[in-house]
Amino acid sequence: MQVVTRFAPSPTGFLHIGGARTALFNWLFAKHHGGRFLLRIEDTDRARSTQEAVDAIFDGLTWLGLEGDGEPVFQFARMDRHAEVARQLVAEGKAYYCYCTPEELDAIRAEQKAQGKPMRYPGIWRDRPASDAPAGVPGVVRLKAPQEGETIIDDMVQGEVKVANVQLDDMVLLRADGTPTYMLSVVVDDHDMGITHVIRGDDHLTNAFRQYQLYKACGWDVPRFAHIPLIHGPDGAKLSKRHGALGAEAYRDMGFLPEAIRNYLLRLGWSHGDDEIISTEQAVEWFGLDAVGRSPSRFDMTKLTNLNGHYMRIADDARLVELLTPLIAAKLGHDVDTESKSRLLAGMSGLKERAKTLVELADLAAFYARRRPLALDDKAAKVAADADQMALLAEFAALIEGGEWKKDVLEEAARVYAEGKGQKLGKVAQPLRAALTGSSVSPPIFEVMEVLGKTETLGRIADCVGKDRP
Image 1 (tube, one colour):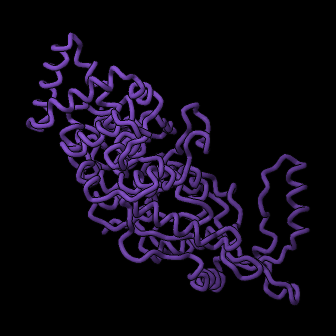
Image 2 (cartoon, rainbow, N blue to C red; image 1 turned 45 degrees about the vertical axis):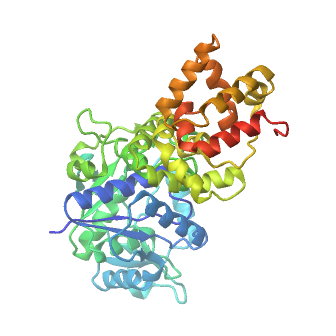
Image 3 (tube, one colour; image 1 turned 60 degrees about the vertical axis):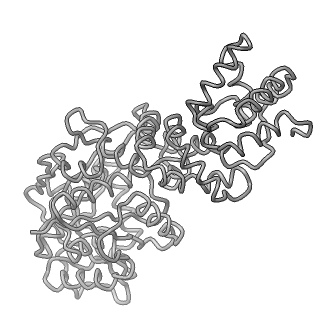
């Protein structure tokens, strides 16, 4: 049997972090077993489903590297198939038409509530003949569910879970207007798509009992269920926007790398010994539902940010430059030219050690792409306003103009020069940093000089010590 899993979001919002983890677990389980991972958009709620949300879901999955195998299924387009199954169940005596009016059902619920009983449909039309049907009144189709015994599910995460069948009433499969319900659509689609394992949040566990009964009524194989605990915030409360329950695109915009998100989501509820840094290749090799815990996991933005810092440090420099270019262009208000990209690439090893997100990295790296003359921040401007420091800088620039342009050589020249002036190295490095970066913070300044090159370095120094400094 080939393993087939699915991720089936409703397009009523973006791909949030909990949904992204569900997609990841389904993707990993399928890949671990050499199977297929399918996508289905459950868009039967036409009032709330939007194309914007559909696009955002696909965009988020693509960014995370969790694309499906084959074309996605759109549930709304399969409504005729869903209704066909319901009518077939009626023909086989496994479902029936119910003609209770909304008013009658409201009265039944009110009476049950007043008596302290669970609110369930009491099967009024379960065994009545079709001849009793009121003329011209459309009925709903209900499943004729078992009334005795138990429904038992061997859940791959929760273990054996069961419910007495008397607690489950005859659920509606088709509404009076002929449209299928969620329960019917999900079961028919999962069957027709060949889904072997349904991996989803444990908020769907109660649905599983009813869906199990529907599978049995249809004579279909029941997939294996695995209900994973939900994600909570750091305070133990249900994850919400204040905790970071944002769309995947928000994490991308905040400068996170997809591999860091995958690694972090993997560790929210799943473990492999004490391993924290787990590559995607390792995750595919190791993943199994037996290592999914039963308790809710807690989302921690600080841990995610630190993990992203790790993946930033090991990321390919050329890839980081491509990711940074639009961020820097937006920050500076102009395109990043080829020469600037070359500088960013040359300086990336020194830059990426100092940042935990792409946004931080863009802020640190932007000076390599700034046009002359550089604008100075407040601290750098204060240094530039010091005539003595500018005189020192101009003299040092003249000293190194004809020398070799390597960071070690430049640092040694600065050290010798500073000692000759009875100063520490920082007395030269500080005005250099202000002139070359426009800031008081940067990677090692002699590395910056080598990356900028002799012409650009001396030009920026001249701008800073000159009269028409910005």
